[in-house]
Amino acid sequence: MTRSISRRTVLSSLAALPAVALLAACSDDSGAASVVQEVATPATPTESAKVEAPKPQGTVDMSKLLQPGALPDEVMGKADAPVTIVEYASMTCSHCAHFANSTFPELKTKYIDTGKVRYILREFPFDPRAEAAFMLARCSKDNYFPMVEVLFKQQENWAGVQDAKSALLQIAKLAGFSQESFEACLTDQKLLDDVRAVQKRGADEFGIDSTPTFFINGNMYKGAMSIEEMSAIIDGML
Figure 1: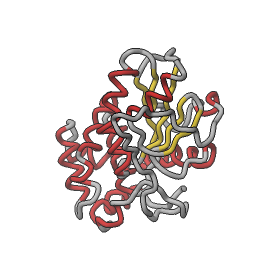
Figure 2: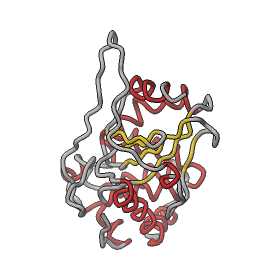
Figure 3: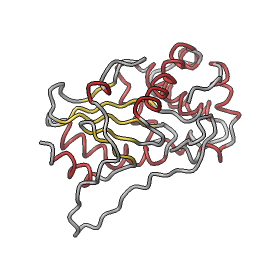
């Protein structure tokens, strides 16, 4: 999954890449920088139906999954929570945005804030715009999760537009970035390398090939699950 795009190209590509190439960014089966069609469709259960817990699509060793990587984990929730969720996401993935905007707020209220779940978000970008968005979130320091939230909510305003650089700059300025700090963040070669290393490790060691992918106490689930589906999984672990 490693690519040879330079740090300067990350900036220039924000304006150069065609919008259509960035509207389907939830899977990449080529192992290169190309973006292919989304594969993870959110579930839409009926209100009257009792939702059963989805079956896991694999398992991983939690001790290995939680080992430190190239970047320190961004974590919400209590360290001793009985359930740990690790999500791999891409910032230009519409299904990731759907989960972030529709499911995550209730997940946070119902499980993370109550000490039942510890949640970790890891970067799995499929294109330079997703890389840039994650870099800006990392440069936000303590505002990582608020920046991710805003970027997902505003995804249509920057991920698929002709001049993504200007669109991201406007969002970044609202988060306290200057033109100089914005440019400095997106030309930070080490940060770019580290973001890519997180993605490569996810693909090589844990078999991730689409986003969002969740590991819930070591069980793998692919796709933007509803709160009902996640509750069915989590409640069975409490």
